[in-house]
Each structure stands twice: as structure tokens, then as C-alpha cells.
Length: 189
Image: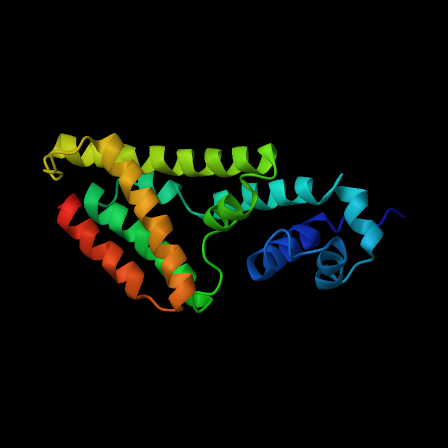
């Protein structure tokens, strides 16, 4: 009888380890121990740690709930704010210790591996495009009065969020996120 796949356990364990210790601070043995499987199981499912990290980033991107940005049940500006509040609540659940995996991996790995740099860039670009789309919708309905074009404002909001998340991770507090929301309210309303 074939053994059940432990791939999902490995991805979950790697996500936890990478959030807690970073990519370079996490070994294959750490991931296997956290997953409760033998070390060889990692190599049965992934070519190397980088391939596993790539899947972790793909899963992380999916967890950002970009679909909520396209949900027309809320007006564009409240919908965009609700999206960022959702992300803030996720950070709060971990006492602001984890930060954003895009930002964490971008800072740690962008000069080490093109695969990871590309995945982070794709994740951030996809997110920026989704934010920009909501801002464009807000502009079309008259809810966005900022003179900034939606694409520049979308880029600024994602970049500003990433900076606020890094600062929240450093200070272990919501204060930087509150600062982001103050600027959000001034720019987007």
C-alpha cells in the first residue's frame, strides 16, 4: 500500500520555519523535524530547499486573499481598506513577529537566488496590479480624488505597506500599521 504524501506537511512546516528563522537560518533537518518526518522525505518531494521555498511563496501569495479586492459587494475604497485590515489582523495574530514573507525573502534572498527574487517580484507585482485595479475602479466611480494615477498610488501603497510591516516586526507593535492607515486615509479618500 503506498504511503500518503507528506508534501503538505512539509510545506506547512517550511512556512513556519521560514517565518521564524528565515531561509538561511532554516535547515532541511529543521523542516523535517517540524513536519515530524524523516529528513529524506523532504528530498522525496522537493529537489532542494529553494524549490520548497518557491512552493511556500506560491502558497503565501494565495493566502493574501487578493480575491477580496475584486469582490464588488463593497465599494472600492472600503474594500481596499478591508484588504489591508485583513493583512494587519494576520500580523497581529503572530504578535507582529513574522512580518511579510515577500518582504522577508526579498530582503534576505534577492541577491542570492534569481528564482526567489523572481517569485517575490511576481508576488508583489500581482498584488500591486490588484490594488491598482481597485484604485482605478474608485477613480471611475469618483471615490478617488487623489491627483496621483492609480498605478503610482497602487505601487506606493504596496511599498508603503511593506515598509510598515517591517517596522511593525522590528517594534513588535501595530503603531507603524496605524501610520500606514493614516496615510491611506489621506491619499485614497
